[in-house]
Image (cartoon, rainbow, N blue to C red; front, side, top):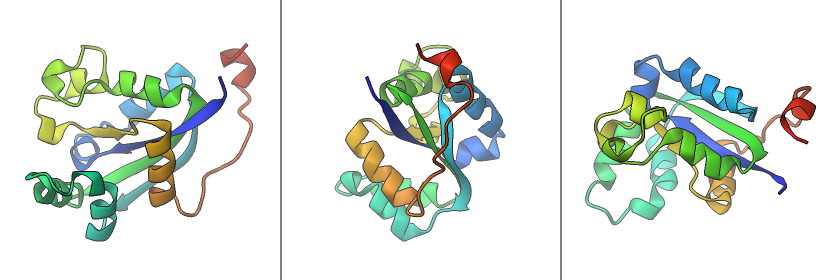
Length: 150
């Protein structure tokens, strides 16, 4: 299977709780390559575009207000099956359904403060990466590639 990319965002609660390093560590330890990273305050327009598929839900306004309430860390990770495995590393959307050892299983209690977002498909990853990284990402060959992939 070819390499793919996934968009991962540490939400304001994850940033405020100083979990950025721990989250990056988990993706790095798995063997994924970081190709995009930035911290930003999200404006309402970008938040509404990101969550456009949820715009008809009753919680949409609160979700947008929450994501613009503090800084987020936006990342793009690359590697074989990174979307699927990224979701496994993150855990279920509902923290009560997340296994211990996952990010949400270890650090979350409520769904409204679930620390992290991860793309749920390659298609949504490509859309989200374009939305959050219009300037593109770093293109480079990792010196660890031969130690991770056969």
